[in-house]
Image (tube, rainbow, N blue to C red):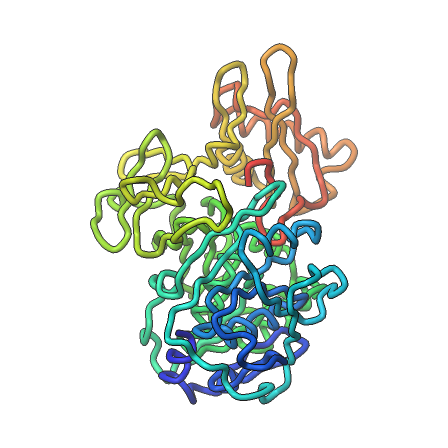
Length: 459
């Protein structure tokens, strides 16, 4: 359980959780509860954690672990109309919240409020001795939400313990929301290592977050590639001097890795592969996009292979089951999870091509949007790109691109024509004709999910 890990590392440079509104010393997470509820009302319960602030979700998690039978961590973008369905399918019998739209909470379920006082609200909730179930919402779900159940042991299996010298304190900062799988991984790294963790606050501008992170001396910073692309043009980013930079959640292409290495030449860098169902797969630390093909034949805690073009993973980090009725099993009969991420091997390296559900069909030929995006991102002056399909009555679809430029003036007036021609010519030199965008539109930014990924129909 979380408390045991915190006790092992107590007193380590007075670490804390901070979201700009409040700083909570980690030592106060041991032996206290932050929920204003009679202790007996939470034992062996199935609790839905619904919060406005990510920090309050962390306080609820620490209070409920090993006390509640099930923790269902509600993401910030869950539509209120789906709450009743979640309560029913997850068999929720108690709701823990921080006042988040409390009028929208389902009626008939006891609800208790999180009280983020500096020293905790009361004594530690009774521990049942049974490991709690941790339920997460899968990303990119349209319509009714989809939930998978993990164990804390599985969620923390990939986290190295005791690897940081006591004289080298760690200060984590993350762009992620901890109520999604990627952000929860970062929170657990901080908690199990008793490290400081800097969280973003709702409504906090990127420039304000980066300035706060720099002032706190962040040593480890994590986010999705989209988070990092957006941050790269923010002057406040230059105030950071991390020892470690981490990317996950989307494909990390070479142009982005190179730009980060130039900005942080002395930082170790890793891009990790994980999914809500399969858990954490692996981390690549050689500064190159993709991953070594040898990973597919290495037999360790995580086993991987490619079948029918997609990556399959078997490991103790895999989710246990879906909560929703009528769902297929998380893993196949052989224990492998089909991640639906398409892999292409070239020599001794494997590359992510995108999601199987995101393929664009151009006259019977397959186009992976992420492959084309990586090519466009290599074009000078491009900050980030997103490739989409446009329906075509003759060939089914054509490829289009929306592009954000480092210098927006290059996408206006006469300059736009030259920039567009440069991008298309660059694509023609690297891609077959059917993959070259039929149109390029310049935009100020690209929509992102609350999890920090580009919004895709297949996300």
